[in-house]
Amino acid sequence: MSKRVALVIVVAAVVILCAIMIPIYTGKQRPTDRPVAEAVIDKPGTDGTISETDIAAGGTHEATREDEASATPGQSGSISAIERAAEAGKYTFVFFYSDESEKTESARSSFRKTVSRVTEQAVPLEVDTSNPAERPIVDRFNVSRAPMPLVLAVAPNGAITGGFPQQFDEKNLLEAFVSPGTERSLKALQDSRVVLVCVQNASTTSNDVAMKGVQDVKADPGFGPSTEIVAVDPANPAESEFLAALKIDPQTNEAITVCLVPPGKAVARFEGATDKKTIIAALTSSTSCGPSGCGPQGCGP
Image 1 (cartoon, one colour):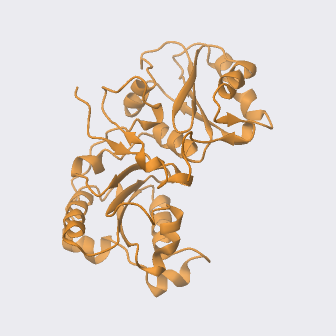
Image 2 (cartoon, rainbow, N blue to C red):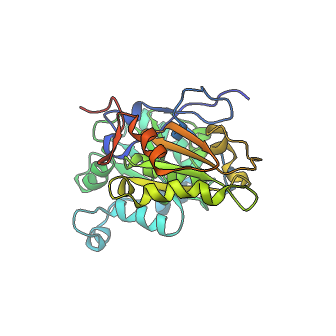
């Protein structure tokens, strides 16, 4: 299968300074040295029938006085809209723009056409970055200097699963939906946390001994707070592309543990039993990680 169009993973704390420059590829053919967290799972959209007019009238969101009154201090109506979508278990596709140019209108038209197909899965949101009322959401995603227009796909758990500056198409946006395991992993990595991906189910062996080292790391006062455990069932079809990115056979009969560090580098893989000392040694071998947490390399002002 040919490599799909590049997407963008956005690391929360450094969105515009470095993460917008990190490409995400989808599909089964991937460079072997590409960070695992860049895997995005393809998921078919729904056949929504909402029209572009309906979206413009009610599907998109502009900050209103009512929204501002109900928002908490420092929170815009747009942020409240994202939170409401998350509560409903939906993604938010955020269309950021700074002017009403022909390029903006063309991108907006493509954006509205696409989200009209996935109304059961995602909520559209349009944000004018030049509007002072939208400053909270602009600051939250650190997009004040991003090339416009820009679309970010925000999963219900807050993970950024796709970033599309200036040019994008329907396929890009539809590929922003990811599996639960990918979603949780991306969120943790974007929060500069270590991810211990535990691939096992009732059919795999060594489950308990595989979890022993993982749980000991999580209980460690130094590493635990900056560590996320993500359980993945290898038999779950939705996780197939995530497993492919991790180079794990979904038919594995033994528990497998993979250690990921920001921005998504796999630093260790264990089949069967794990122990705290070995996992920590693998994590600290990466200069980006230590008891104080992890962070992406080569990023910053």
